[in-house]
Image 1 (cartoon, rainbow, N blue to C red):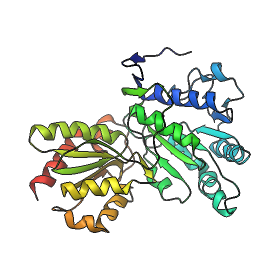
Image 2: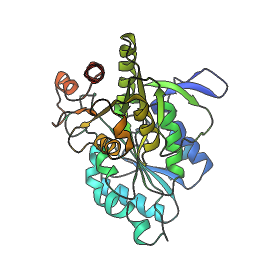
Image 3: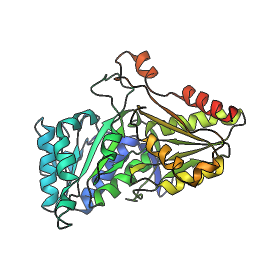
Image 4: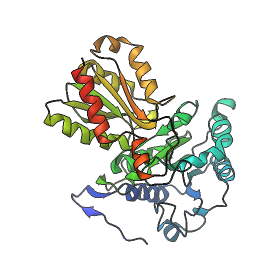
Length: 339
């Protein structure tokens, strides 16, 4: 078993890392339901590319923690078949970029079967995949592809930003009868926070408001949530108070929480790591523009996104390609001061 850095802080919660929270969710799901099993490249002996499944092979055995060949198409196809047969597979893809090798099984099989069979079958499968930049992994290992999956009817898409949400949303995803794409940002694996000891489920389709303020609303996803909270601290020192909303799941999307915040603050800054063109936050902008929340705006909606470039390898270029805390602060100040 791997050593742990879990630190007790209360009887029902304790501080642990994002990676440990995911591992605990997997273990608790496997303990409570014998249909749950894991499959993916190097998830057993090696413990996964980022160490998330370390120790689970020793705990649950090779039948339930299955090291697979290097074939994303085959891995996801096996999971779809297992789900149709009554199991609850949890797939780990080493990098979310590699889902491109399995898009037929994800988009044309997992997402469509329930509909095409008139509800007679379902695919309760979870696909976990690390994504995002910041580790020097370059263009083929650093993308943020959530908009691909959100575009596909039949898939649910989750982007947890905190350890507690990583655990609670993963447990909910494993329970769900639908295929769920669970995207974990690589930079978050070592982040820490309070996590419930018990297997507490979070609701898929419910946003979290991390901070309340009256001057503008920042809607951010994944690693940009923490950066937006850091930016909000800097803005508060200047007397600008931001509401920070994390959708947590972009499919389904909690539109009500986002619209309520926009109606109250009158300004909206949308922050994502993924490139600007075709990015999911554009859907949120369209949502606001298409309803009465539009009339609450005192300034145009602003999107702060990654550049429309492949993620560079050079560290300074990699940082420049996606929003950083100073970029969020600057965009928020401009939004407030120009209106």
